[in-house]
Image (cartoon, rainbow, N blue to C red; front, side, top):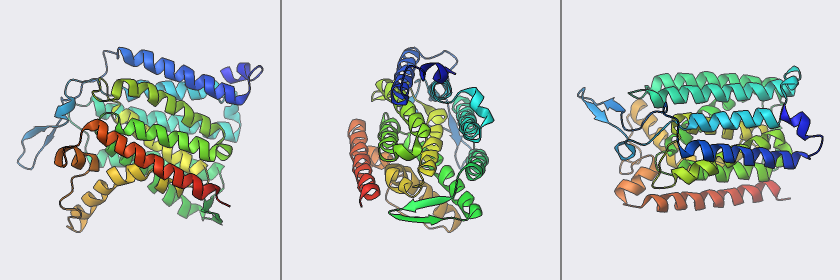
Amino acid sequence: MLYNLLSIKLNDKFIVLLASVVAFVATFLLLAKPFEFLPRDGGKYVIDKDGKRVEVNKGSSGKVTGVGLVMVIIFLLASALFFVPLSALKTPAGAEFYIYLGLMAVMMITGFLDDASKSPWGELVKGILDLIIAVAAAVVFVKHNPTDVVLFKLHFHIPVVLYVILAVALIWGSVNVTNCTDGVDGLCGTVSVIELFAFSLIFGDVLKIYSAMGMVMAFVLVAYLTYNWNPSTVLMGDAGSRTIGFLLALLAMKSMHPFAFVLLSFVFLFDGGLGLLKLALLRTVKINLFKNIRFPFHDHLRKNLKWSIPKIVIFFAVMEIIFVVITGVIVNVH
């Protein structure tokens, strides 16, 4: 598409910058006055153990949600227009790239349908949908990439079947912990921006076009944060957070350092992942881990310790920067 025209006069780094700026401007303008069809938060409810309707997300009541639909569409269009022409579909690398864009589009749509639903979708339904997308992405990955990975400075090969299982767990987990962290203004977006830039800086030489994809999403999120910083006026919803989770897992896999995900996504794993672990243990073996701690952990800080939302975001952002530095040192030490 545009890449064929731009590459005649511009180098690849300038094209990435141009795509990122275009995505930022488009996001900033379109979120200034969100589309009327986007849902409003606060109309959702859950059914408690007594069969009564209980409202959820009261603090965000009335705000426009599901703007992740707009953000992800801009991200997908910019990635397709500026980086890989449609003619590249005939090549394995181009086909792989567009399949990932398609899977992220599906993730976005399922997330938006949940955002727009009057009552939240059940965990089972969302879990199955995430699992299907994760399996599809893992299979596509092993068909187009070697399953060699790097852990610190150790290079080793993982059998294809085992890699698929681990990749599915990585994608499914990333989608869900990222989604869990999207609970207070600015938190998920801020941490995601830092992590996306980190992938591009640390693994840019390996990621190549996928590094560019991460940069575009980072710029989209920066524009979003101008409206989502506390007190927010818009919320990305599942349409945004779940797609970001997919992208972060994909970048970890394409970097050949999938285990670096544990460090780079430590904030998401700590904030949302421990909550998922607590819930799983409680339901399966009836063990109430961290009994006195509320999860996601940002809820514990906000409701139990009475931290302000900006303080929570800054705390997690600093924590994310620390783990980015640790990852960079580990990857680049000789």
